[in-house]
Amino acid sequence: MKRLAKWRLLPLFAVMALLAGCGEPFLSALKPAGEVAQMQYDLMLLSTAIMVGVIVVVTIIFIIVVTRFRRKNDNEIPKQVEGSHKLEMIWTIIPILLLLILAVPTVAATFKLADVSPMEKKGEDGKTDAVVVKVRANLYWWEFEYPNEEILTSQDLVVPTDEKVYFELKASDVKHSFWIPAVGGKMDTNTENVNKFWLEFDGKASDEAGSLFYGKCAELCGPSHALMDFKVKALPRDEFDQWVAAAKAVKEPKQAETAQAQAGQEVFNNSCIGCHAVTPANSTPEQARMGPNLTDFGNRSRVAGVLEHNEENIKKWLKDPEAIKPGNKMTGKYNLSDEEIDAVTEYLMGLKVQ
Image 1 (tube, helix red, strand yellow):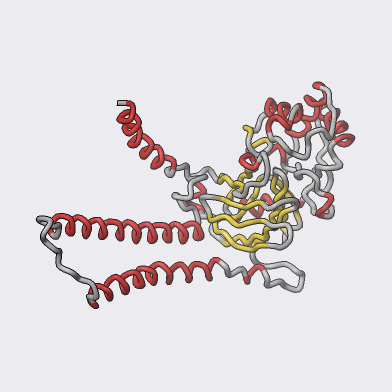
Image 2 (image 1 turned 30 degrees about the vertical axis):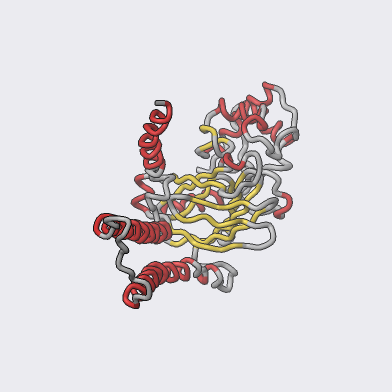
């Protein structure tokens, strides 16, 4: 009876596995939200259809053989087909055809996805016509540099919809992997070389997802690997241009308005400014970027990439970052009182580009 009870759980596990693939539009690879994701999704469907077709055909043949050609008694010898040229041709040609059916679109898609030539073509000013983002992965946060726009952000990637966005990927410490499931497949970020690829964010799908997609690290990189998330704000071109203009307009750190925020800014300048910039200009060398850029921190959708963005979670993060992201580089670098944390929190909430 116990064994039967265990077998009864199989249908439940099957349903759970099916539902696990039916994610939200901002997270699921099964709901493509761009040209790259759609191509990869179509290849998944094609390969799945071929595998299911092979299983069905083999199962039918097996049933026919078992029912029609089984031995009637111990003295009967089934008809021998060894050396049949017809059968040998069939089970040789069919697999080759199936491989061709899968290989041709796969190779075509691979070459199309590998074409990053537009990001290599620079004008006299050293800039490209295409949108280029330099992604740098760190333990456990993400940095996004826009070389054409000359601005730098962290954690929240902002991109235009309905056009190709080109990425340069690199890691500061260990191997990571850049992945936006709904928009395209993953690609490694290495310390020794730069990987390049492109994605396209569908405007209609972006509207359905509330203009917000989730990105993740897909390479085991340490104790907080599963918490190394980032968010993608996909905006129409005109809104993206407005965001760029607003970011470029920030030349100096924003001044706090309230008395408590002013106190928090003073604490920040004494304890945090060495690792966290509060202007979007790319003015510091790569090795000096010890922590995420906080220029637009007040507009972020998450605290530390994983917590809901509110004052309570900011204070929780500042009091004990190790409890939220084990192994992070912020732990033990400062010592703030509860009053100072409250003041810094109010200051950070006021850091907004728009």
